[in-house]
Length: 221
Image (cartoon, rainbow, N blue to C red; front, side, top):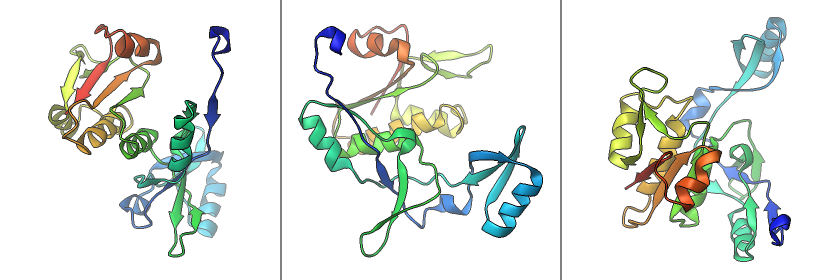
């Protein structure tokens, strides 16, 4: 920004994200986090701390839940900074998951929030017209990594949901981004201007600013 003669008004916020204590994800932790342990160390963690552990190639790791985000705690600060024409970096890693008790106090919880779901929620709460999901491939594909691979230039949310139900977008791959896009667009079906784009960082400018269609997938209601 400085090289372009612009004031670098960039702010980074450590963002807390509220989740529900009754979220079903806490009954089935699936996200490996943290350091690797030996089998004996893992068994000790299970016995003493009641951790759920999973064995991977490098050793054993703790598994935590991935609950749905329900509130962006620092939304007010994000809005204020945007009003001051700042570029706001927030929700790193999906945000810091917290519970809220009956007194309104927040308490951290061992969990991992999906970053796409968190971004979708923030975009809904701020009433954005569009959201970009940056990923490692230039577009969404059907039958990805097969001979029949087919690029999707555009999808409606109904089509996206059908492909999702049919297993085209796995949970560990494109699934979370498609689910987040559907959630964002479904939250205000009356707003026909809303769009989601999925592409890689290299093609963002081409897809969004220049309207080129060689890459990127657009999802609309």
